[in-house]
Image (tube, rainbow, N blue to C red; front, side, top):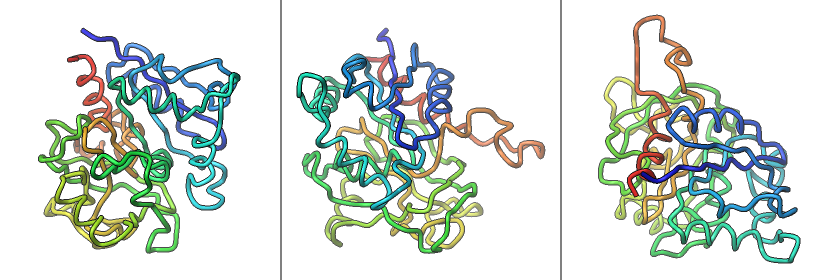
Amino acid sequence: MAQVKALIVTGYGTNCDRESAHAAREAGADAAQVIFFSDLTAGKAKLTEANFLIFPGGFLDGDDLGAAQAAAIRWRYATDPVGAPILDQLKAFFAAGGIVLGICNGFQLLVKLGLLPALDGNYFERQVSLSLNDSARFEDRWVNLAVNPASPCVFTRGLDRLALPVRHGEGKLIPRDAATLDALEANNLVTLRYAHPDTGQPTQEYPYNPNGSPRAIAGLTDPTGRVLGLMPHPEAFNHRTNHPRWTRGEAPTLGLAILAGGVNYLKAQ
């Protein structure tokens, strides 16, 4: 059985790194190490030392220039001590079969880097973005999610419905054009949708869809299914007492199930 070694990249305002590392361990990862982006540029760590990469939530660079925009530029142009691009490490990590989870700010980073959605296999080409919520406010609430059973995503295999918290100001998906939005659905790259709590069906109704994202899109995968980006925080639902209605006997699936999906995929390799 393969070992699962997770790296959680932090720094520049990220604030959910330790929570994400804890969730990865609880989900079955054999090791989960928090590293700073500066560890990569200093040569103290390498992405290729792991097979599970997590970009956690936070407020990268204070969301200046737009959420994760500055971080995407940093990833594109930063180098290690010998002048090799850090982005080459990310490309090598993915080519070796690694899996990637981007949560909230991490999702924003993945789409701005172009690791998602990678339609037609065009990785590192920006095809969508995430922008200001329709409510024009920061949304901090629990949401219901419907899982697309036809999605190739390795993180959501066997899952149906989820309840997770969101906390973001820029979570509305903005596709490059209408054809891109259609292609996301046609290729089943829409993995998670905001759902109405009563019907379980995708919804545009506020606040069940907290940001107005078109077609209720809450999470995307890539064509391989090995990359997942989502605005809700699965790592923040790591115990039943995290849920606001746990004392009433409600026991929805823990957010850990998403991380466990990735861990189980790697262990089966």
